[in-house]
Length: 147
Image (cartoon, rainbow, N blue to C red):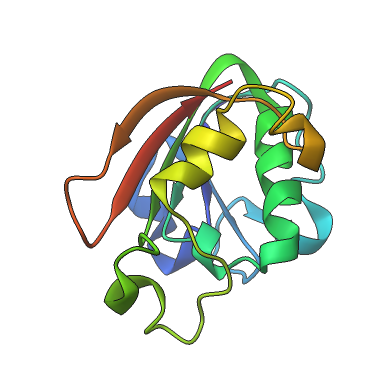
């Protein structure tokens, strides 16, 4: 199966190697409210890669762990998830947009999603491995996680 493009929006066809996922029908393959339903209808370990560019910050903070765990669930072993989010330590990017509902820093990934247990296990977070972390661009935090 192709990868998944979470929050694909109307430009879903720009990434033909990914199946679009959005809660609004733009003609993409999956119309799913990932905050409410996760990745319902997508099998465990059936996806090679996930792209989450500028979507995670639009998910309510209490639902972030659920959505990330759903991504982990559908990825194959050694599958990758590429993420771009505005860093919370760049307030102009992270906090100026009134549609942002969750905030991210490099420590969000290094301590909680890829940290040593029991830190992530304490919060029910599925364990990821850090494949790449790029904090060089102050307007964007780029992360590649591996299942």
